[in-house]
Image (tube, rainbow, N blue to C red; front, side, top):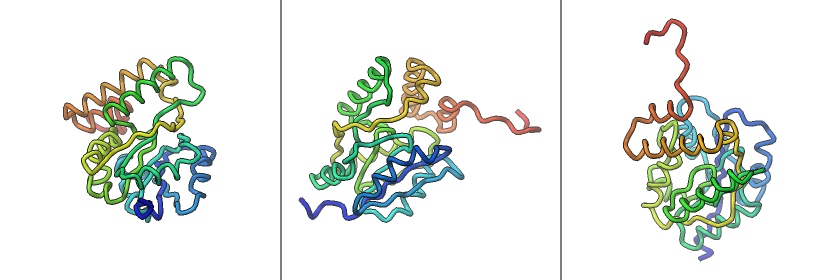
Length: 219
């Protein structure tokens, strides 16, 4: 299977307003042999569109999409190579939250149950795939929210999808800001809305709040 190991893995990171410290762990990860770091800076359009543009720039025959405030396993690159060489077309890591109390450990536990049983991980866990699987799936779509879920659903049709037990440790910022229970309810409201075909604009307004009106604009 060694001939199936990717020759170059592109680590694609969406950036909005994260500090340089948040990128430190990912820069160290990108220092591994046969990797490159591709920063997807939010400029125009949604996060999905931003990631799609970054994936087009990436040179790797495998792609690893990970949030700037997440810390993948230290040996994540080798684990990705191992999974892809073993026949997977795509996959993700399991989830943990940094400095997590009992409530957040429960949220992470349920997230991992969902990921393993339904093969539906979210982007904060770190998603990886072969480039041909990404392109066969159609890549990221221009969505303000659920862009990760939308891609995963299509990646699963492109070939075997694995969820590794090694964990990505991510920031619980939104859970701390809104409260774990409220955030869980909001996430599932948006996910259910996505499956029901509610417009991306409405889902984005639910999750992020309505966009502020410009002075002089009419209702």
